[in-house]
Length: 260
Image 1 (cartoon, rainbow, N blue to C red):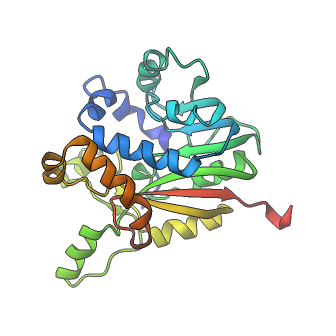
Image 2 (cartoon, rainbow, N blue to C red):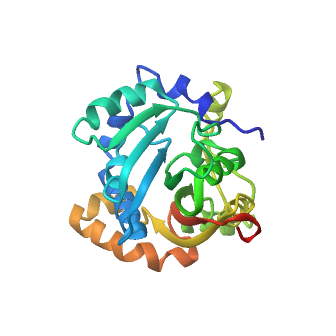
Image 3 (cartoon, rainbow, N blue to C red):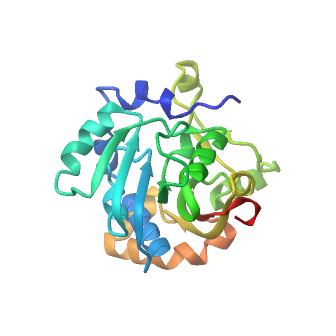
């Protein structure tokens, strides 16, 4: 399957009929689950330069600014960055730049922290984007990369019932109608495969969290907000080993080549 990088996304994310802020307005649990994960992974650390790649209107850039002196929000969508101008008005430490994740206009080894959340969902082959993350990170620098988990618990049960093996290649989960319209790729990744892709980009896995573990609509309806988030906070580290949730957050370290 050919790769579609972020430069191909504006037709979707610049659609006047699609507002990404509205999309998140009904997903408070998922947003807070991601905030919990980022704060846990970065707790006690401080960075100079950070980049939020594919950060949309900046919902997580604000969280990154708690840990970095300067955050650059990067997105290929002019509409997203226009929304960000208002959303980030009270956060002068975050600047925005229109940029393609596969061709980042940053010098080599110039960034201390990179976040890339809900981007690999649109990348059947994320190798170019991961190579760019590695290139701009300083040796020893930190990255947080979120992966839509093909091997989550419910999917494993489904495949077991059908007596099918989980595919190792990225799995396109779009409907046939969306595929026929040429809609943006929407894929899930196998953790073992992305682990190899991280290593190929000189990104060493330091820690993994299982995120949005209670995303099922019935659970979200049954549990009060504070209860579900308390359970989520307890579950993220405990369930990471079995790749339980639909979203995995990887904490990565840029490894210098040749021991340099």
